[in-house]
Length: 368
Image (cartoon, one colour):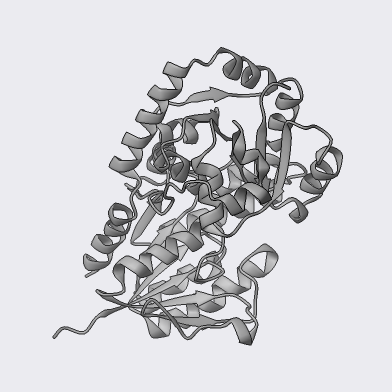
């Protein structure tokens, strides 16, 4: 029997996934590929009581640093160097470990690099950015790409940029959405979430300014006859805290819920909404969007190229409060039905974890 190739997954908080696209991707890479490969997942700072030695046959290694914020840079660098000595193949998610990439000229490992998006563009799109930050992100991007055998993008909108800038052919591998499954409403949840008894629209996102939650809130202030439920981790930013304090329980048709990590409850709330509103403006292929598509929901999306690529231009789109109001007021039942059918067809064709993980598998098998 052939010895399994050793694979390291680097750049996340670790698994089991609680949130985040990279964590969810890691979860399903382990689930689908651990039979064929000897997988190690590097995990960030976790209390000893919550640590696991293994998860779905993958080994978990913990390091005393955070995968987020400034600590993500030393965390990724240290774990990459550790993996150089322990694994044949490195799946690296994100560019925080860029300073360690050039050393692969010595170790000669198979690096599969998921760029996760054009980070310098995200910096430029945020408030208070500096030219130094943009130059640093561009340099990190270049170093990672130049020292990787395979570069993975999660959205087709990034392909032209990488071909033009680096003359490479990136591999498209988005995210699966079929982990989200339809759930009917239970009697117990009706008591906890009474809005489930009536018609409501829904949006789920992190409380960051580029998620444009303020647009939804302002829209539904002007649409008192429609209700919206917004689920977010409000406490993670001043933006989220301000929105929550100013609007929670102030408008009967605007319901603000704290982040829900119980997938069963989240699926029930998503499964039974009338419209799903996707607001991300600086992301690639958003897991929350492809999950909504897999749940057969009609989608109204913030109008950027990546969201149009994900939905194949078959959803409805908005740019601000005025256009969102216009879209909602003019929408007809037959249009909603058409969008639901289109979103489900796209998701079945493109956004399944079996298909996505097979792309990684092929690149691991072809590493020699």
